Length: 358
Image 1: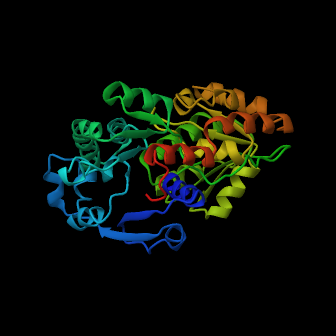
Image 2: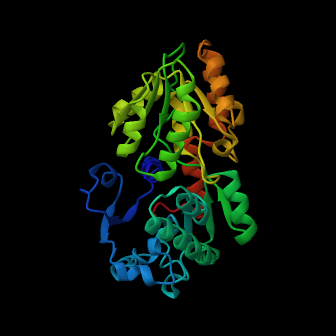
């Protein structure tokens, strides 16, 4: 959602007229994103159990809407499908003459396999494995797109080897410039969506192998933390849980931490939490999986075991974050992660004749 929102914002600033087609999830409509669009149409998602018996991925077939296709046929503008989950009409003959691109957020079959590995519920574990298989079979539809906009080098190489239509355009993000703070903070931070089992597994690893082995204050922050995670954290005096922080609170945590620790289990996509931490935080300690294919190696400290993370954190806690380090971030991030530059690249792909509609 962050990538989508800030991509739309950047296209709007560049003068592109956007007709947004979105699915409803029981939330109120976003007035903020609607302000960037010439029109917005919402569609219900069919989450009935019968969709589970389709050969198509549930995440795809549950987004089928005849009204969506009808509305797409009302104009001749290029179509940007945001995620493979939205591509139910990608190969529809009625859209054969349209310019089409798909935003690839990660390699979905691998992502669902990762979710399955760390899921404790047998029913949900089975669902994730089945969905991973269905997505793997379904991916061939992506050859019907003129462009696949991938977010990382790993994803780009994977899809370009299969379909020869990948263009690397990293994720859009909330920052127009690097805004890190010099000096030192007094705590270590891990942040993530704690309703996702992979992130809960990472938090558990950090608690048992890293945070419980150091004497520095440590904070774990994220939405919807499970009760068992709360119980584990309560056993340690130096570890604090901040559940469901709002945007301002999370931003302040990332900015004020001395170290953002960002390990991950799934080796695909570009971790937006890494990009956000590099734009507004101080030191970033990551594992190889997080940094793989990002091109951001020079800006991070890599540690692949609990012991090495403990050592990195211990070494960095006494070192101020300097203006020279901030300037290095500006230089590196400007190459591939400037929202304006990436919006311009997307516009050139979709509008080679320099039209002003999307």
